[in-house]
Length: 492
Length: 120
View 1 (cartoon, chains in turn purple, red):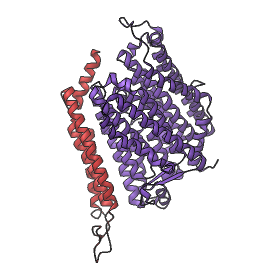
View 2: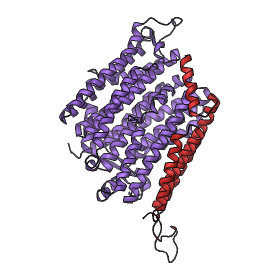
View 3: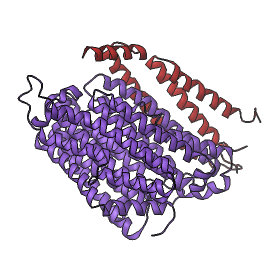
View 4: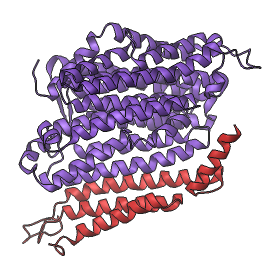
C-alpha cells in the first residue's frame, strides 16, 4: 500500500469523479467528495513525510521501467506542492455544500463535485508525474474541468469568461505540446530525467531553443503572468465562489511549479539562465505585473475583481523570486506559493460567505458588514493584512525572504520595488475595510446575519493557518528550503 | 532543404492560419475553427516527427528492417482526443452564450456586458 502512494494520489480522485454520478444526492455526494479529498490529503502528508525522511520516490506505472513506461517521481518539491493543493482542496470542500446550495441549481450539484474532483486529479497528475507528455494530458484534464466549473457561475458573464479562458488556455496548452514535441524530436525521450541528460548534447540547437520558448510562453499563459493574464480576472470574478476559492489557491501555483520543473530539472539552470536572457525578461514582467495589477485592483468595484487582480500581482512576486535565480530566491517563491494559497483561499471563501448572505460582492454592498458579519469581515481583514505582508502573518514571511534574496543578489532596486508594491496592496485592502467598518448598513439590510458555521469553520481554519505559519515558520521554511536546495543541487 | 522539409512548412503555415483566425475573428464559432486548425497543425507536426526515412509502417513483417517510430502517433492520438474534448466544450459554451446573450459575436457580447454594468 505504502509503495503505491504516488499513484493513489492521482487515481483516488480520478476514480471517485464518475462515482459521484451514482450517488446523485447533493448532500451524499458532498460527504463522499469530502472523504475523497481528505484521503488525498492524508496521502500527500504521508508522501511528504516519506520524501523528507528517505529522499525521492520513484514509481513505475504498471511496472514498466522508464523510459518505456511512465514514471512518477516525487521529490521534495512535488511533495510540497501536493500538500498545498490537497490541503486547500479539502478545506475548501468543507464549505462547498452550503455555498453551492445557494449558487447552483439542484441538478448541477453532482456535476460540480465530479468536475471539482477531476480538476484536482489533473493538478495532482501534473505535479506527480515525471513524464513530459503526461504533464500535457493532466494539464488538459485540469483545465477542461476548470472551464466547465467556471461556466457553472450564475451570471451569464461566467460563460463568456469561461470561453475566453478556454481559448487562451488551449493556446497555452498547445504551445506546451509543441515544446514537448520538439524536445522528443531532438532527444527521443519524454522522461524528464532522461531529457535532462540528453539535452546537454543538443542544447545549442535551434530546435531546443524554440522548444524552450514555446514551453515558457505556454506555461506563462497558464500562470497568468503579465501580460498574459487577461483571462484571469473575469474567470475568477464570475465563477461560483467555491470554484474561485479553489482555483485561485491552486491552479496558478501548479503552473509556477511547471515553470520551475522545466527550467531547473529538464533544461538545467545553466541552459535556462545563461544562454538566454530569461532572468531579465521574467524579472521585468514580474515587476511590471506587480504594479499594473495592483493599480488596476485599486480601481475595481467588484471585490472578487480586486482580489483577482491582486492574485496577478502575487504571481508577479513569485516570478520575481524565481528570476533572482538563487537558492533563497526560489525558496521565497515556494514559500509564497504556500502562503498565497492560504491567504487567497481564506479571502475568497470569506467572499463566498458574503455572497451567501447578501447575494453580491460589489464593493458598495459591503457597507456596514463589519458589524453585521463580524467574524467573516475580520477574516477578510486578517487575510488582507497577510496579503499586504504585515508581521505575524504568512505574507510577511514570504516577502521577508523575497527581500533577503534580492538584497543578497545585490538587486537593491528590486527590493525597493517589492516594498512599494506592498504599499499598493494597503490601498485596495483599505477600500474594503473602509466600506465594511466605517459606513452605516444599507437601508433594508438590518437583518443580515453572520455566515453559517459551515463557512466560518473552513475560513477560520485558513485564517488561523495564516497566523500560525506566520509565527512558527519552521515547517514551511524547512520544506521550502530543502526543496529549493535540491533544485540547485546543494545537499543540506 | 525547402522541399525536403515540406511537412514542416505546412505545419507552420497551418499554425499561423489557425492562430490568426483565433485572434482576428470576433465570431465565436470561427474562433473555435481557428483553434482546431491550430491544434491540427501540431498533430501533423507530431506525425511528421515519427517518420523514419525508408521506414515502413510499424508492423512486424518479413524482409523489413526499418520501421517508422509509432510512439509520436500514439501520443498524438491522445492529443486528438483532448482536442475533440476542447472543441466539444467550446461549442457547448457557445450554445449557452447564444441562449443567454442572443448572439455569438465578441464585440456584441462585450457591448451587452457594458450596458449591463452601466445599468447596475
